[in-house]
Picture 1 (cartoon, rainbow, N blue to C red):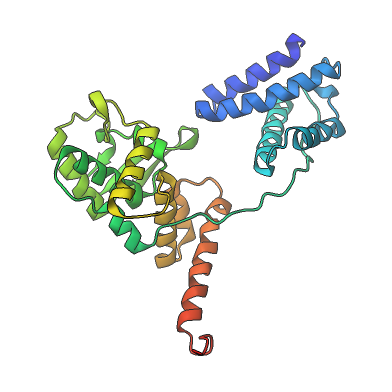
Picture 2: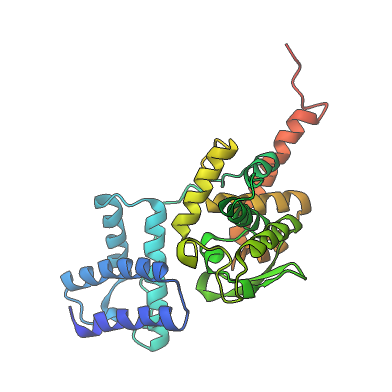
Length: 299
């Protein structure tokens, strides 16, 4: 592999890390997608990235689908990584056109996110007891549901980020972007109980595990799974399910898609629009059950 090709990839990954401040896991996905592109360029004897033709990029993507049986979602991610890479090279003057711009990948069948209804959420978050674990788990459950946090955001929050007086929390999301989210009354009460119990410093993690360290994402997942079983919620419960439920319930009540977008920290409102489908689905059920001209006659 020529130093020119590999060096361009290294510079791009460095750009994602230092300038765009992407998460390490995201950079790893980009690196894997570009490693395959580098291997292909070597087999084709390319010395400069501008030599790669669109039909070659399309053939490689088709091979990934045919031989490696990658899912449509994975293929779309690979194609997106390649497009971003060549956009970077175009800005750097290394390519004139983007050979990945017209890549075609299988369509992803978009699944509606799962949610818990309001009764199931109440059953989950109302953890009984006043022992240390119960107080902590009640706080993390209430906060995840109240503010629609991603699990990584929850694990990164410290006490200094909470303004209990105004009921606001500063979180750092994808791409190291910071946003302010509201915290509900019940979540604030649960956090107040946790603060009374832990007596933390401002720099301490909001939700701690063993040794006072931040509870890890896997630790949060394990707590949710256990609490769901203990609380009698017999669905698969995971952190993003609470985020989905928060967004769906807010949109169902308010109809304010833009506000939900800001709460969740979505860069594109199209990502948030998936919850409108859930809202329409709910409306259809209510209509079928309540409308006098829609109800089926009892046999």
